[in-house]
Amino acid sequence: MDLFYPKLVTRDSTNALKIVWSDDKECIYDFRNLRLNCQCALCKHEMTGDKLIKIEDIPENINLTACEVVGNYALHFTWSDGHTTGIYSYDYLRKLCN
Image (tube, rainbow, N blue to C red; front, top):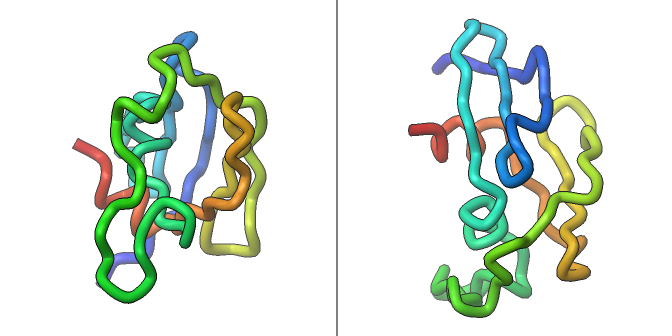
């Protein structure tokens, strides 16, 4: 299993995040899609895995207000809608990359 980590995390545009991974793969993440894919207990049922948040619950103009590194394995995002509990592992972010 390959272990990837971000070499660079930047804002790609007003509504997207860009991550350049350790293997130089570049991924662009739309803010609204990132917010929709939050894995925290408020957004995803802990037992069933069902999503508890719907796309219509997320403002179209959602903004990423802060991004912090968590240990050596994840990023923590703070969103303009006040959501702050999600942690996105590097492995999960890499899987979200198209």
